[in-house]
Length: 356
Image (tube, rainbow, N blue to C red; front, side, top):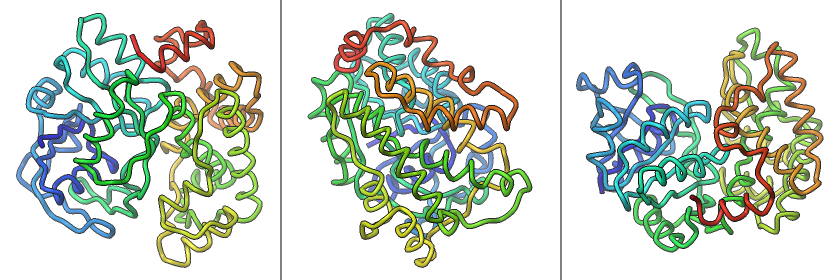
């Protein structure tokens, strides 16, 4: 199948590499064109580690070209770029043309559903709880894929298209998807924001000084306990909404093929296997700039809907906002566009099932 990926970062390139090895035809779109300039000039994209391949992805000159050429569209950008990308996609998606959001952030699926409804277009919006791969781009033409996740949570809006959404993702990316009970479950299934909160907050000086530091090896027992406490808040909110989500221990087990233990022990094992990776060497990191406004904030607001305060999530947002000298809650451009805080719980649950 022809799959156009809106994005050209590590998640986009990792997905493109997987699709290429599976016999599909990926296309990449970088809004600025900078990330794909070398690829457009004819250099191959090289993937290493968990995926070993060298290939020539097709490069789109714009969103219209990317979407017109696609059997399936996939959004793989940081959360702070989702509104821009969804606005671009909404102008060109065809009736019935599927779009995968990897990973879903801040109820972007509802924003896109509303934009499409205004055009009289209905497309299945398939939402993943996380990305297919982990890793980093090491150059404009190289991506180091640390792991390919064995399980990915999925839900489709409208919910009536779930069977087809699951079948499509399985055909493209293999038998690794777990269908969840709608978009609310997916909104509470992305563990990266809470995990990155603890990792970034307790290693902030390393980030600010540009140090090279091992990520997994610095998830010490104290940091691991904070990560587990953050997870307990998320699980309590999910329980109040009546949806099932995986635990942080299951997340690590499925993402990195580890035996279940404490989070500190699982990270120590990941480090011992040589797959612990390196933490951010700059304050200009998605661990904060993306995950705080587009990951932590929605969890805090969902907790308010059901009377389950996400105290640690909110405290982390406040601490990082103070450290950066900015109001990260104000950086979220999706929730205000939806009028999210004016919704009732019943309206939110209905929209999460059916969209607009």
